[in-house]
Length: 215
Image (cartoon, rainbow, N blue to C red):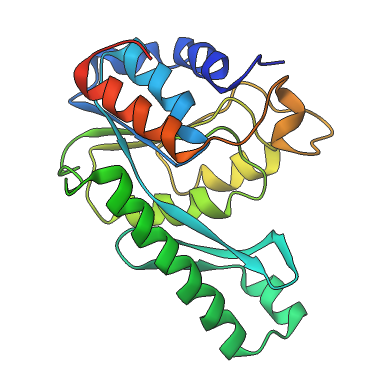
């Protein structure tokens, strides 16, 4: 059990020590829950921390179920099997996509404060989240990031479903997931405190990381 996301980040960092000497490492967090985890990883590896914004596309009326995700750069990934079973009208899918695109833009403007994402060309990129369930958000992020030509693209999470980790290994150069419970019920089962991460905490951690301070 992890005490909280910061504790999970400290433990995850121990499995990522080899990237301390990788070519120009960059830690990218999936906000919001991935930011406290990534903050500790970035601090341990002495690497810069940035965010990469992804929004899950929830099934109308059952928003916790992901029918896909969108990511920075106009990427949209859909769960085609689920959509066929749902027979969801195209207009509903587009309405959900438009709503989440507005929130994605809001978060990018808030978290980046006018700063653009640094070039990933020839960098060692570590994509961090607080855990993997269906992996819809991570899948969209990995596909978007691959197009930006990093030297190495690594997905690292403290806990995840074994099947999801295996599936995403096809999109990343490496997947680091030290805790894979069987049976897997939810990411929160591995945490004592799994409360929501707010915008204020995200901004504080990003600011502290840029300034090289504790938070």
